[in-house]
Image (tube, rainbow, N blue to C red):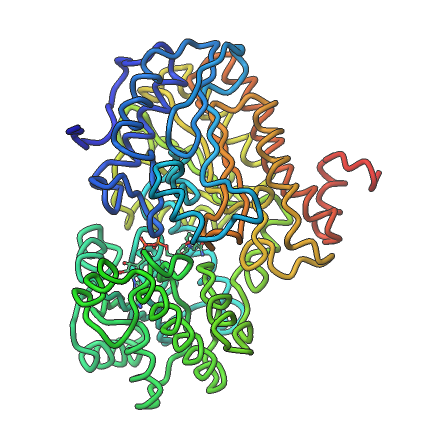
Length: 550
Ligand code: NAD
């Protein structure tokens, strides 16, 4: 089957029978836009093998189903394949998706790969299989927020005059260079695959590329001395770079990593061999590849711990590398913290998370109008206004124009309803899709990431992610997804997502009023239940009802 990936349709002419179905179709095709997806020809969107549909036949089936779907029907997607259509009602979701979910006892990569090879499942990552990935910008604000929290906590508010070292410039990790320079710092970001760095240069997320370790260090030290922001993509294996840094005692201020370590077979290159040698080994001896990959991660984490001992600020950036190292015998693998407990949890206690929207018109002017709307609605929020100005200046749109803003409980519904109003009055040229990452305040159970070190020890309680999907379905989101294994890999996470379409109608208004309250509200109740005083106070002030705390 030959399918052409030319991205989403734009404009106001519909291929489907309503805007919600049309939005799902456009966002699916947007996920596979060559500007957006890492490997569209394999249906891979980002994050190792995070896919938008199981295979080309299933993709074709989804497209056909969405085109014929009525406004009172619901399409069911089982790991990237359309499996049923039922009559529901106008206020129900148009699509329900479950991706990569395995019965707990079977929930590991070995079983997953076996079932994947039999064509029975697909890895959905977080926003790949749930059709709300918006390219690297999606992660940019979160990464910017994280590095600015690092700056505030350790360097007086700015990364000026500091060097950050990281690795992995893929779909998500590619946001790191720009997030560091937006905070005024210098960054060396290693990636084994030159083409990934080139992609970041094209989209202006990274300033320079080199194959030379010496050149990267020289450029970094010059920029640091001048207090000038600079991002350098170094074509190299992360472990080789770290070993060199340690051997030569180079001063690194901040260290993290965003290789796809959650997936030792498809997401990580073992050190001590070229990329071509690694790909050959993977093809010929996948088991040996996984062994070498895990051993390499153990060495990677050992180097990170050694740099921490030498005074570098080190944190895990959500790829489960510490767990693999621990399983490989690195006893103190968790010596450095995860980024959520270290920097993000206070935001989660206010229902803040990666809220985003995309303009179905395809016209950048629609997003620029919503940028203005943010300024009109939240004039007091200086950090948000700074972000909007920086995004306007630095972010090249990939696929459908889109914007991400970390908004909290109360703010999200305010913004969603205002967008719906702009669609209704025709100020925006077409409806707008409103959604979020699964990495949010009340939608994930992931003990090595979003729910690491919860105050009451509830890190591995999965009920919250299930309840999030159920309440958003009841509230009438346009599509709702429930996934397993995103971010940190099989066996380590459960999470859900939602999207609501603002098409300017009264029905959309009602859906937005419900979903954009229940969804971030889950973050408030989850953290209040776990004993966070900030969340408990926030719930009281904003009348979020929590039966056991009333
Ligand atoms: P990706 O698969 O698109 O990119 C991974 C990159 O790492 C590739 O470019 C690859 O060439 C490179 N790489 C692999 N092994 C390497 C090595 N040893 N040395 C140097 N480069 C190497 O993945 P992505 O979407 O960028 O996600 C990266 C990781 O971050 C994933 O594990 C993902 O789950 C996690 N993640 C974290 C967050 C967060 O907010 N912290 C959010 C999303 C994803």
